[in-house]
Image (cartoon, rainbow, N blue to C red; front, top):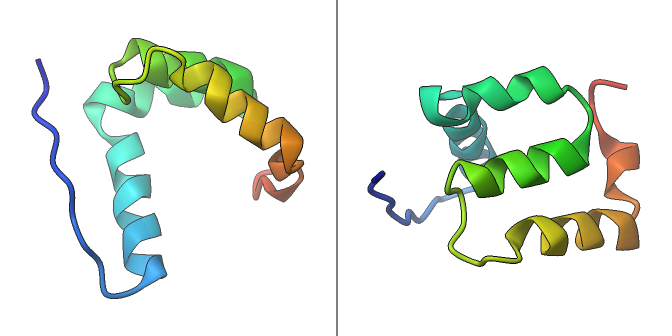
Length: 76
C-alpha cells in the first residue's frame, strides 16, 4: 500500500506543480493513455487508490460537468 502525505505550499503554482509531478509518477503515469477523457481519468485515479472516498470518481466527474471545467483543458 502506498503511503500518502499532505503538504503546505507557499504559492498555488508550487501546489499545482507538485500535483502534476505526482500524476506523472509510476503509480499514476499509466493514466496518460486516457488523454483528455476525464471520466476514464477519474475512474483510473480511483482504481489506483488516489482518494479514500469510494465515490471519488463520481464526485470528480460531477464537479467537472457542473462547472464545465473540461473546457479549460490545456491540450485542446
